[in-house]
Image (cartoon, rainbow, N blue to C red; front, side, top):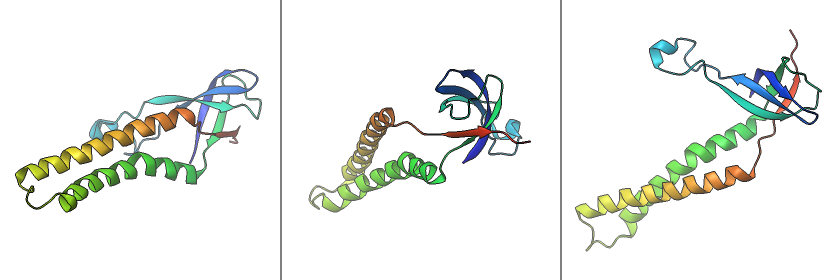
Length: 137
């Protein structure tokens, strides 16, 4: 993933960079209801001695982006499906009635909730390491 942003604060070791979020809809945000003008701040190691106001390139390893996407999207979906299927398979036939569907849904939601708590705890312990470079025009 490559993008660029403006340095808004710097000290010796880190810079705070304001990054404008890229539009997924091609700049017609009125039509899709997206927030194209949203920006976010990231903290980056100042390896290039960037100063306030400079525009810098920001790069993140694509493999890391895919792993993050898998954790946030695929794992919760997998756990929901696993919860529903496990109740349907392992619930004794004598107990299976219309309540088994409800139990399967609640099991999926419960596993999803556990996954979200784990993701939140893991996210606190890991930093995303961005790399910056001077922007070439």
